[in-house]
Image (cartoon, rainbow, N blue to C red):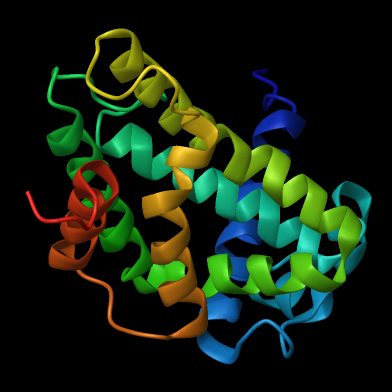
Length: 204
């Protein structure tokens, strides 16, 4: 008599985790972060809420993990598993390409709603804010630092330029427009940011 194989707990846990990620992202997009609850996520995912609390202490933690996973999956789908900015030797072109991709992500509803929710929650939840910066923002900013440092070593920018300050010339305005709706974001907008940052405002 052939016995049925024992249930694979690892596979079952991964399936539940994936369902929870999908449920959290979907609910935040549909009804907003304030109305999303652990109970709602559990019901949408088809799991008990204790399953969620066994892995995460609160809905913000679920959303952060789900959003990080979404980004990793999107990068793998695009064949961009290496976390580095392009280095073609043309700094302006490389920065414009990355910022255009950032605009596309900001305008994608799958990313927009959870990213806004995490940014807003991080302002009032200090512990979550620190983790949001450490796990999501800081790695992205470091890639700009690395690319600008390489450009400095190649003589493409002044030797006294601080890469960490320089990146804020184009990253921060984009983030402000997106978060506060102070103006439209587009490829033309980020291309202009790069031109202004690299070439200044004085007549040439």
